[in-house]
Amino acid sequence: LPAKGWETLPVRTDPGRFAASVFRTLCQKKGLSLPAPQSAHVPDTAQAVYVHQSKPLSKLLSGVLQYSNNLSAEIIGQVAARQLSGRPVSLRESASILANWYRTQLPHTNWHGFVCINHSGLSSLSRHTPRQLAAILTAGWRRPKHGPARDVNLLGLLPARRKMQNGRPAVR
Image (tube, helix red, strand yellow):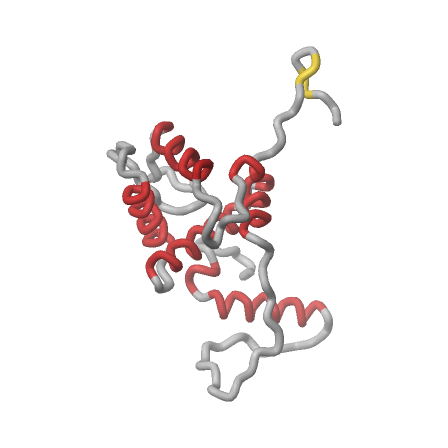
C-alpha cells in the first residue's frame, strides 16, 4: 500500500493496479526491482500462466465472521452484486443492488428506512431494523439447498456457542 495508506478500498478503484503494486513490493523484498505498474490492454496473444481457485464461499464467509474481515465482506458483496447485475459496480451501487434483491426476495418484510451503504457495515449512513436483519438471516437459514451457494450452512458459519459453567465460559 502507499506510505500514507489508502482511503478507499484498493480493489474498488483499480484491482489490477493494486495487484501489480503488491507484486512489485513482494519482488522488491526479494531483491528484484520492477518499474511502477502502468495500465495497459492485455494483448490478444497473452496466455494465463496460473489460475487460482479461491476457497469455497462457506470458508470465506466463516473467516469474515470469525475475524471481522471487512475487506473480504466488501469483496464478497461486490461479487454477489456483479452476479446479479452482470457487470462490475461500485461499492455503493453493489450495496444498493443487494438491498433491492432483499426487497424482491423478501416481499413480506417492511423495508421502510432500510439503507445499505456497503457490505461491511462500516458506515454511519447504513440503516437496518432488527426485524429487517432477522428477515435476511431467516431467509439464509431457510434457503433451499441448491444453487451455487448450496455448501453454505448459515448456522455452521457462526462461532460455536460456548458452554457455561458457574456463569463463565467453559474451557474446551
